[in-house]
Image 1 (tube, protein in one colour):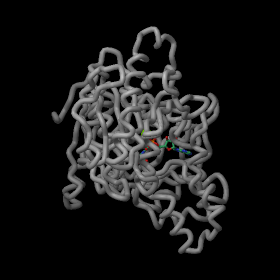
Image 2 (spheres, protein in one colour):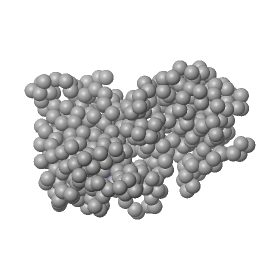
Image 3 (cartoon, helix red, strand yellow):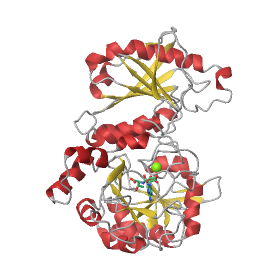
Image 4 (cartoon, helix red, strand yellow):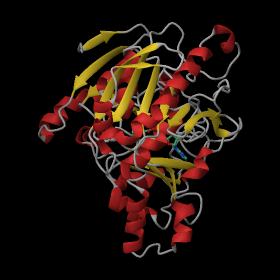
Length: 444
Ligand code: TXA
Ligand code: MG
């Protein structure tokens, strides 16, 4: 990547290298310009342990507005404010709800965002007009040093164009935001590859997970139990802490989103995404006929007359694409995947496969999900298949993001299409595909 780029949207985006393993004083030197730029109200993208962030001084309303513009993000979708240590949260909030400080001490710095009652210091532009503020302390050494050095709270959404997959490499940020930001701090790949857990502590006595991430429901529950801060029976824990089902509602216009993905498109590659519900190689052959049928149905969708006025962007094949199917699979299934597939309408598809290491935490899968979406778009994928992961740890975060990006599901038992009103509806043999809701993030 070149060091300085003249981009077409006005700004020169300067790339600054920062080494997360460098000694503190060396890192300080590397981050000097970026810290100064943040203080001055310029936009600076930087790595965190989750994904890259698009940062700006959270106390300057004009800078905050520029963040929304650079990202192309609707201004009622609030931003997370990043600081380097717990003391720096104090001025941003009006009070610490009962569980907040113990949770902050346990999990911060790290991949957890807390929603807290906001103070008057936080501009309304940051919180999308709400009376709460999202706060986070990244543990990534580059992010943490940059925030300490800047000495101002930094509002930072993920550093992708709105609706695109979150960036996990500096290269991804560059693709989306070159010319729209002043600096890009390149600190190498992000550790987790999915965004932080968002935990709401401001809407009542009980915590609620609004977005699953690397700090899991079980970790939060075990900590609160052991610290005797909350020892509720299972019947109370379930709906209160892991109420992910509540996130799947479609929001009408005018209502503020409580959680990421409730209203706006998220995590979407250009090609339609198909969830493959196969847990092991043995199930692969049984699911293949349904996948081949779905490819044929998607081919029929591609006809131009089908597209007039449809609100299903991302749900149908991109016209003019060669038939390349890209697949993100666990290594064993990747090894068993064929080089070519014949769809049920007898068209030949080339397959390109990415294999991730299997583990019980879903960590490798989560780490590669967004990066794979971007790689697949670049090779011109006509459709993307991604295999399911177990519903625990980072596997749950993976399934949450995949569910929001996907328009179709396939298993040995059938084909499903995401309908905006009805959720997942099964497609019967011989039927046309219903108009899919596409990647709008409203359903899982
Ligand atoms: O890992 C992360 O959280 C990354 C890195 C850069 O820190 N940031 C990130 O930001 O994912 P963003 O803006 O892409 O996602 C944050 C989500 C928003 O979609 C928003 O809906 C939600 O958090 N959020 C922010 N403030 C909120 C609030 N006051 N109440 C409820 N949800 C809020
Ligand atoms: Mg985002």
